[in-house]
Image (cartoon, rainbow, N blue to C red; front, side):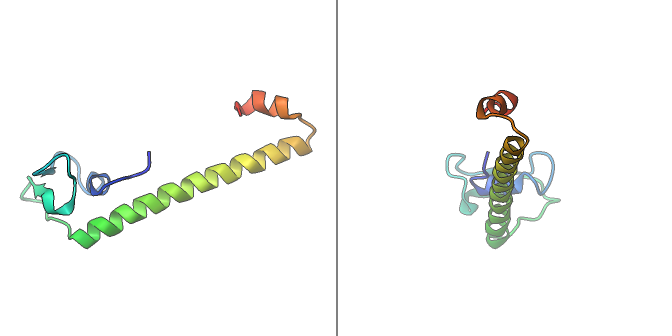
Amino acid sequence: MRPKDIEDYLVKLHTGQWFGWSDSKNKIYANLIIYDNTKTKPTEQECIDGLAKLQSDFDSSKTTQEANKTSAKSKLQALGLTTEEIKALIGQ
């Protein structure tokens, strides 16, 4: 699933329940609470940048996966497999 809020970034910084939210339905930086005093609160910009990187990496991975699938189908067709045979192999 594509990362959607800064929580997706925060869980990758440290293990355990080191942070929480003052409003769990609104997971924005202003509602971020740090529970573990051995951890420092990342800046809002670090959270924004970290989430953007996760989303970019996810999108790139999906694009690469689709390109590989298209390439594989073309190669199988070049080997003489029919569309039905390819669907039977890869399910699409």
